[in-house]
Structures are given as structure tokens and as C-alpha cells.
Length: 336
Image (cartoon, rainbow, N blue to C red; front, top):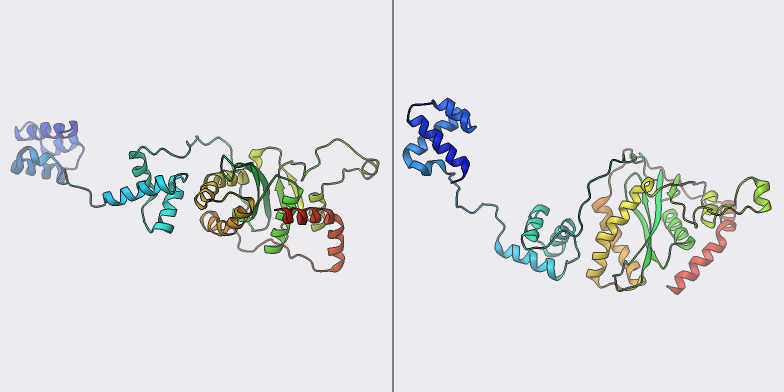
């Protein structure tokens, strides 16, 4: 018997001896008068067994079968070794038709000695910026150099753009390095699929923001430095460019890459992907599933995307600004 049950047995004994009332007994053991009366009657019929719960020794009705637990462990060690608990739970349902809660899967794995994929840190005291109200009001884009194809493969860079209001992954592609060609590819994909956003939010990478102190004579006369190739394209499109001063300022896309490094690497390893070409083909299947899982509804249903103008004058002005960069993209696509 536990200490709690021993206390109940002692208090009921005081009731039997006439030293306290049932109401006082209920207050001492923390139950109502009606429950104290039930316990007292049960002790009168069963003796000390009346103190014990009726379900003691029985298997819970919702206990997971041993065969299911073994199946979960087999899949966890054999196929989904690099998956976190939530990701693993989702793939069990999608691929193996095993419907379990995340907490059940977590308990099964921990009891078998399978630790969490990464330790959770306590959240910092930083207030998150409120999302934009409309889809297309702001797009965040960035590159993440990492060993995406596995620790034994060369590092590459995942270039991605997300919508601030919905968290939707708008476009993504693997490149050998972060540069103008990657950002212009992202811009082209966003224009083709969605339209022109109002704002592009990014860091101070050299492909996006002039970080040098050199001013040519023409720039001095104009009173400003000429923008980068990507900056020229944004100006031609009428997109406001905002350069963040810290990684925390663009925390939404930083968290995106954290999630992708957790989930996408595991998915690529599961499929045996080891080349940029195969990884980019896999992204076409991965992005829709990712958006179904993580995107949210915007506060306003009306979208802020602007249509891409079709006038020949506008097209010529844009082409003159980014013609050389388009050539870089074409040459890169032929190589990859």
C-alpha cells in the first residue's frame, strides 16, 4: 500500500472507533463526504481491500499493444532513424497507416532508450514581430549553407523564400553557394507563381546589399551607391527592399531553416538523395506537404500580390537591369 492508502486506512479506523465523523474523515483524506462514505462501506465489506482502487492490477483499456510498440521501434531504428518524434508520428500515419499520438510515440521511444533528436532550449525573452495581415505584403528570403545531403557530402546552399503572413514556402532550390543567381531564381519563381510582393525582407548579404565603402564619381554625383544586380531588379519591379540588422530581426525565416534542417535532411536521407539535381526534384514534392503542415491563415483574406505588368516598355526596362544575371542563371542551370 502507498502512503496515501495507509493514511486512508488509518482515518477510516478512527471513524470505526467513533473518534471522528465521516465528514471529518473526508476532510482529512481530501475527498467529499459521499466519497468518504463509499470508502467506509467498502472497508466494512472487503476490509483493507476496500481502500484499494478497483482497477488496481488491470491493464489500461487504451494501452498500446506490444506488437504495435515493437513495430514503432522497428521503423524508428530501421527507416526513420533521423526523424524527430512529431515528424516520425506523421510519417507513421502517412506511410505505414499506424495512427498514434505524438506523446504515445515519444513514450515508446524513450522507454526503449531512444533519446530526442535535439534538446529544447528555454525560449528567450524576445517579442516576436506580428505577422503581416495580407499574403504578399512581405516576403522573406535567405540562403542556408549546410550539409543538406548528409555529413559525408559536400556542403551546399538552400535558397528559400516564404510569405510573412502565412509562413508558406513560396519557392526553394539548392545551389552550390549563396549568390545573385539564387536570389534572382527565387524572384522569378515568386513572380511566375504569385505576383509582385510589396516588400522583400532580407539580411545584408553582398548579393542583396552594398556593403563596400567605394563610391564612384557617378555615385557621388547621384548621391547614392548603385544597388546590386538583385537590387536593380527589385527597383525595376517597385519592390521595397528592407535589410535586417540582425538574424533575430528575420527570425521567421531563420526558424524555417531550423525546421528544414530537422525535417528535410531526414527526408532526403530516407529517399537516398545525394545530388543537387535529385534534391531539387525532391523539393517539388516536399514543398506542398510542408505548406499543408506549417502554413497558417492570414488575418485578411484579400491578397496584396500585384500583377506583373505586360507592357513592352516595362519589360525592356526590367531586362536592361538584370540581363546579365539572367545569363548567369541560364549558365548555372545548364551546369546543374
